Length: 146
Ligand SMILES: CC(C)(COP(=O)(O)OP(=O)(O)OC[C@H]1O[C@@H](n2cnc3c(N)ncnc32)[C@H](O)[C@@H]1OP(=O)(O)O)[C@@H](O)C(=O)NCCC(=O)NCCS
Image (cartoon, rainbow, N blue to C red; front, side, top):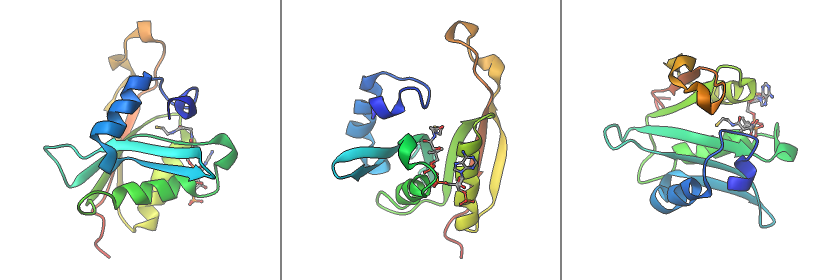
């Protein structure tokens, strides 16, 4: 996961991925092609809001992008765990068109409203860590109403 994530999303330590797989396995999904990892989505259901599935990172292998795998991963994580969720939430950097399109497509496919608002403005990110665009929160739902 760490290797697929490198260069595609904010870099985190290998430990961060091990932690997600160990403690949030119910809410994370991987896609393999003949034993090779070609995509993953990590996330969790906030204890204070268990009807919401928060997507932390989703990455698809560059050679597989645009084939619908990202959408399949989102569908699978929303349906994972003891019961399907009512809301799917994620933050996306303002300049990430592919990711924004992915979440809007998920909302359309599930016939659910998609609210978008600034969650973390760029000023919150320390300059020492490098420039970071504002993070836009996508909150999609309610799901499962049709
Ligand atoms: C974002 C990402 C996971 C999308 O995965 P994917 O498998 O390519 O997405 P899908 O093929 O399921 O496409 C989903 C929708 O997004 C649209 N889309 C995909 N890539 C796009 C792009 N580069 N520009 C515009 N729209 C795009 C598709 O057309 C589709 O919409 P539609 O159903 O209306 O046709 C993939 O581009 C990726 O790994 N990006 C790098 C990592 C990243 O930025 N992750 C998100 C932040 S954590």
